[in-house]
Image 1 (cartoon, rainbow, N blue to C red):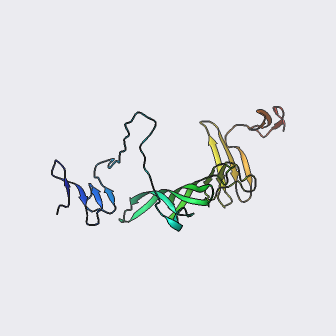
Image 2: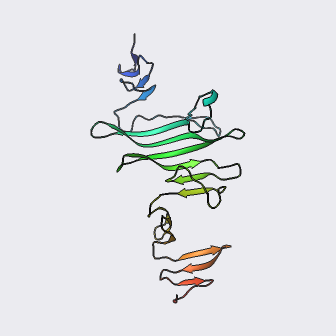
Amino acid sequence: ASTGIDDNANALAITIDASENVGIGATTVDEILHLESTTTNKPVLKLEQSTNDATSAEIKFVNGQGGGNAGVAGHDLGRITFTGNLSNGAQLKYAEIYSEIVDPHSSTGKDGKIGFKINEGATDTDMEALTIKAPASGNSGPRVGVGTTAPSGTGWDNNASVLHVYRNEVNGGMLKVESSNCTGFFHGGNENVYFGSLSDDPVGLYTNSALRMLVKNDGCVGIGADPGGTF
């Protein structure tokens, strides 16, 4: 029986093993479809759509479970992993993107989630760095978590669209905004909440599109007016 398909150069191009796994450029096939190349920046999987409409090519992950297992919270929908070899020959997963079912609702369908994981080298821990979840209810906004897998507006407004930055340490979590010559921050830790400027720039408080309070870079404070040179 033939073990594969030869290309025009008489080199083995496609291998089909006894488990019906298919290898393209790979003679030892590990998965259902295994692509391998020794050429720089290869292999590349190319999907091309040539119609003159608004549609596009697609990679689709389908969870085909049925019966009582269909739509169960916590069940995976698909994963993309990024793996590399270590100097000792072992393989390490450095990062992962995945989707799963969360918070099922019998009448409105199922909520979705996308998670982005990275390997934290110091502890060799698979850390979920970014989580994107569906709205908590029909009248709420989407939720994004940095450092938390359960982003929410609990404590203020759980129906708001939320960017939730979490780290349970004194140095906590921080939102940093920066341009070429100005850096601002909002920081919350176990012992404090701060916001301000890390550069030589003032910090202002606005309401109704008007400046109401200004803290200048020398510490002078003005309410309703420029503080000038006095505190």
